[in-house]
Image: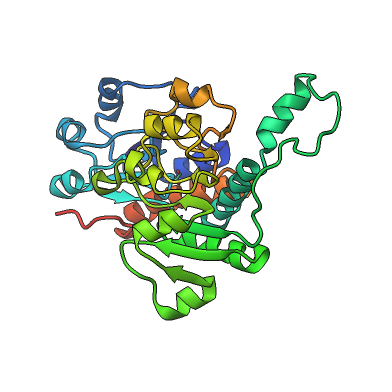
Length: 323
Ligand code: GLV
């Protein structure tokens, strides 16, 4: 008999079909938003769940779903998983690393350029019919080339951004990370390790690519923003909650920071009204990994994790070692 799985959100039909060869699949192609209680009800009798980083897997859910053995996230980030509760409950978590690294680094760079060069703001101006004549200082922004790029969180995606910056744009790259990279990787990225304070002070542009956890909650708040240059740009493609959105909006409104490019938000899909009110912010709806081939590769990899765990007893991207 095929084990039962729940696919919590809408998914590529071809990937659903692949899953159906191995599993009895309950899907959500209407992409309904379920409450925690509805998710628990749907999970009764299910061996696995295919999640998309929005579904919270915690001790309460695990206690109510004793048959659950695996949660496969279609995302590299997994702060929706309480991994320690999952390990205790004997439930495996998996994610989708590597396949999205370059696409996400591309987007980080795109958002940096759009923000520093005021692309969204100038397009809004043009579309609203305000462009009557050219002016010497019209939408003059900050340079990318030759400037200092500061990267907070130097994993695979951070390194991809560093390579683009150093090799493509002649930027000076500094980074801060929990642990320093080895010398060969630093040389390849042409990146210099600095303390967090120096990182913030030296940044012409700051890109955040660190994972979200209790330790990184509000890693960038009022005190950190106060260390930055008033001409600096901040880009967050990591997770909402790493930046204190209210403090950021206040710094931007007060001219203590030039501009921000944000793909992730505290409490998304809600966006704080103070951010929405600002002209010098580029806002995108959590799409850093959203190229068609990459989203498909992520979808396939999450499916592969479920299939490999059922057929071979081993997942490809295990995040924990359940009891
Ligand atoms: C997207 O945010 C991911 O973690 O893959």
